[in-house]
Length: 174
Image (cartoon, rainbow, N blue to C red; front, top):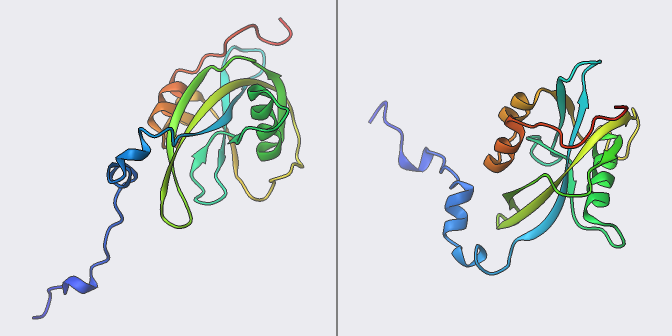
């Protein structure tokens, strides 16, 4: 028949991450969540109280994320978050020692398996941004308003933290 596609010609749609994980419910309840530490890097625009947040692209899919990584030996969680911000985006600054939030996400592994992650987020008021850093050329970097950062990231819990992001603590130099 002309005009009708054969079933074999239609590409199969990959199930959503939630659908994949629903098929392996034991991962949600088996302490399978792996811990990571991330940074909500921000800066003030000029002398105003307007804030911009840093988002970076992931190396594998190119989607927008915040700097994050694994725990590091002999580093406290906030220190590990600061190292990730430096390596992934070339920024340093004043790091808040207590987490300002947390989000979860599902990482798709090379073999197609899904691994749940939990990320504790630490606020960094950026005071230094270098042109050269470890992962330069592997990521895109953007400074955007918090609501735009929330639009760009995929993870719902991270979106909710970013949409109304207000720095905690005193502004540097005040």
